[in-house]
Image (tube, rainbow, N blue to C red; front, side):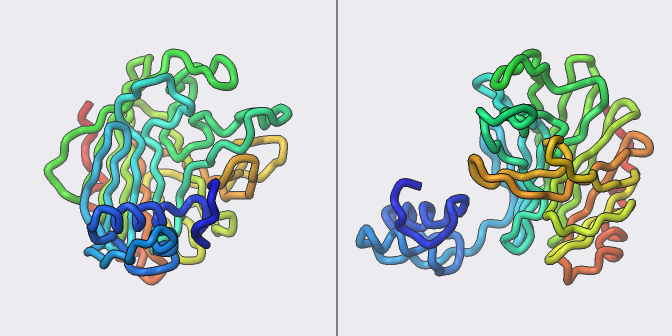
Length: 291
């Protein structure tokens, strides 16, 4: 952030989007706000607002599904270059503009061990994994060998994302992300038992074996037992988040041990009845895994 042209935080890209929309004469996809300041510095009138984007959007390695209140971003697809992180099938979830399940970030490349570029492995990302069958082999701070790419599967629904990851050992993991109303439903299936799913959540989250409650949202786990990892300053995987480089903040790291081969995680706004959301998604809970 070389020029302080807006009061918005560094991770807020709305000033740039608003500026670009004004320059191209197109409506911005959100309401007016302090993010219009950057465009004003360049002499552009704040553009009018458009209807917020709802539906499915895809790039080569990321896919997004969005409703009026909820959004999920799925990391899956072909990589052109060697990976920086082992994060295929990672999902970020936002509710009412707040990130409630998020990527751990980077922290620092040159910190003392164990913090020397430590937030890169799959055990610190929001991914399903099988013990002993990693996505790739780490060979130094920045090098990964034998990495696996996830392929995005075509879907006919405009509220569903689906991707699968075939590990080097032949094990297949499939992750489906659906929006049902404002509920984000993440279903993980594996071709073998022994799957664990992790979520990085706000540090104040109250974790039980079957769900999470926190300010602004709640979550429910069906098909496994959850536990919060005890935070340890010498263990990067125990619940830490780096919002910007060299900054480190606590997070609630939750791991769910899947009882069979399928887990369903549901995120909803706090004013939505989580039990009602669970009943709405029961039809997906017992889908057969098709390798």
